[in-house]
Length: 283
Image 1 (cartoon, helix red, strand yellow):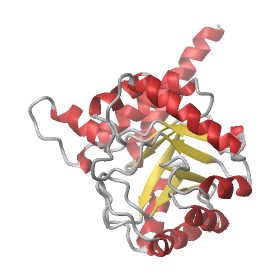
Image 2 (cartoon, rainbow, N blue to C red; image 1 turned 90 degrees about the vertical axis):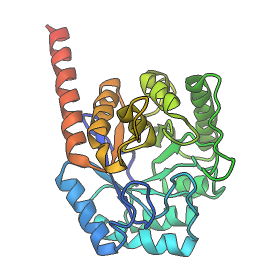
Image 3 (tube, rainbow, N blue to C red; image 1 turned 90 degrees about the horizontal axis):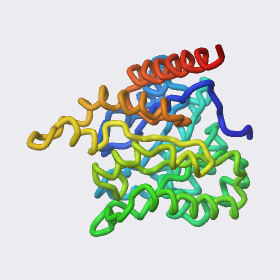
């Protein structure tokens, strides 16, 4: 297994939800053939890697069983890998991660950071695979939202540092760890915006940063203004591209998005501006 994929700019991670109930595009790519085609379309539009998931993590979502998640995810991973696509598997189950890595996935993106399944970290460590550690305070169901913070940036950074420590102790190499602030997970809109304003603090943890803001509730709140109704998820892609440009400018390793083309353009513009700044500094 090779190390963490690297690009000369912020990477674009396209999303393939093989689920009937994703908040954004649930059911659109539920069939294996449609999901593989969608992944290939995202690559054609500029995605550097594709994140395949078979379980919705939206608030209130019911967990699917292991057999169903495997049935959804593994054929899609296998199909995309056969086309040479760099794949991350979005799962909280070690069994799904293990099978997906064997089928050709390059990294594991676990929104629980290894907390949902104690076997996850040993499986990823044994495979030598890169691992995305997201900030997570439990499943988004019932009263377990836990969206209260005194200082959201400090608390998220501290909790991520502790989680990274556990992942390192579990045998995953330091150069294969990515951190993700978990926008929208146990967080209100103001928390998400504050974290985006302080990505430098997340970078100070010492690992590449993944930003997954695409179509999320906080963007709906920003676009709606104080009185209006938030626009539907699929009408938040321009706002997502704006976040992608900001994240790329601040040094994010990758941005995870549903609609790739606008974000692929946004990160390239950010790279060009940074290039102009570097050229000016070198004179």
